[in-house]
Image (cartoon, rainbow over all chains, first blue to last red; front, side):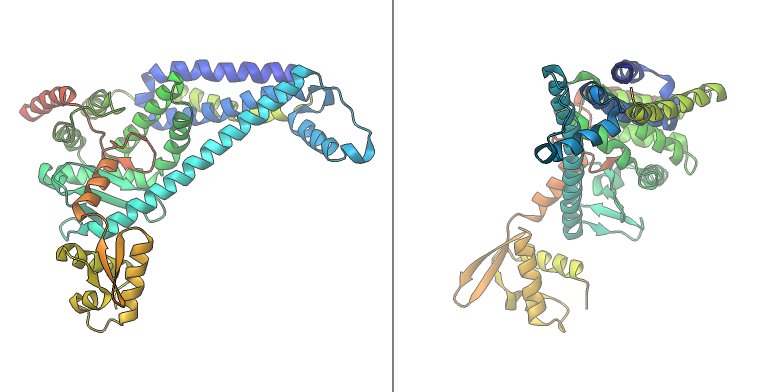
Length: 307
Length: 118
């Protein structure tokens, strides 16, 4: 029973921590560390919530989740042949087992579906780009989209493409354009799309959950901040900030559905570019990293212990 | 000899510019690259049809091809995705800045003015 209770507590702790982390502001001072903590929280929550159900269901085996599942499957296979099967299941354990399998299957399916959809969407996007976008010798390595609106983005992948619209080229000064490109290159280098993928998947699976929504929005912003941080090593932070504001003012659209809070995010990024706050203390950063590591290890450990 | 992707692009450009349905022979004649084998043009037209970019209709013994949608429609589709206005919030792209509403844009405009005055 200890493992089941510990896993249930761990899952609840993850939810509480996510709720706190979504409104925390220290994260803006160390976006990369905060992203790691988010990833660790998400993974641990998934393993702990499914693990708690399995640990309870398989407790009669006294072998822990991993070996318990193995024994269960082995006995299920040999059920008809040997007749020597322990059948300690009561209704609640069976229900927990079914719930555990369902939740785990759901999480895995959602993730796989999101990966598939993302790959398909990118494929179509690349194809359309290859038919309609063009190159410009003044901005080498960048695809240009003939549209008066302002946008700059990258299509991630093994052969990532940075795309800028004609409207954005008109809008930005050369320094600002360089800053935008440095930002996009940072996304490409650090594979931020992979960071965002599981959170976007979870959000699409549970769109009504406020905590999932907050978590995704929070990670999205942190990823942008991480890219800003990397970009400012190669360009002027001030130009990056004015580019951001120019984009915001030019790209205004009547009522973007589900894209609210955009200005809040932009202002948060502008503020930290113009007035960078002091770095977090070494002790604090070390503490957060240790916590992330401990979390990530704790759930697999509890899956293995026999009680 | 151009790559297949580039060929797809020039063929789409020709068909978009024409405004009427063309046969493979007519497309071949319009392409600048005269050394192109007629079968290559056929292959690319076929590929583009299978991918859903062209439709074809019978005209005697030949097929006539025309674009399903205009070039601008595809650019608009790309733009919607780029601005994340499709509503599906996928993580397919990473963007420099998200779209904001008109009210929000006003706040940003003020901030920009302040920054430029400093």
